[in-house]
Length: 58
Image 1 (cartoon, rainbow, N blue to C red):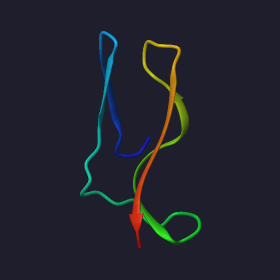
Image 2 (cartoon, rainbow, N blue to C red):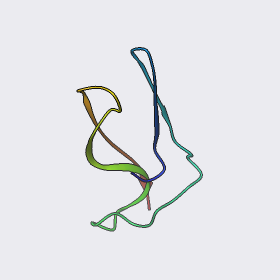
Image 3 (spheres, rainbow, N blue to C red):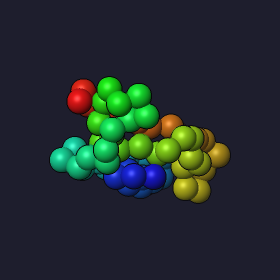
């Protein structure tokens, strides 16, 4: 994961992302990646999965 922090408090999932960060261009070159789970990942201690991409126009 890049710039994604997951925390679980009981059944409440909190996702923390620093919107000031950038990780270069997407593979298409049309957007800049801000945060990503880089595919689907399992939520710690749970069976559920999450897939997340945060991006902005170039």
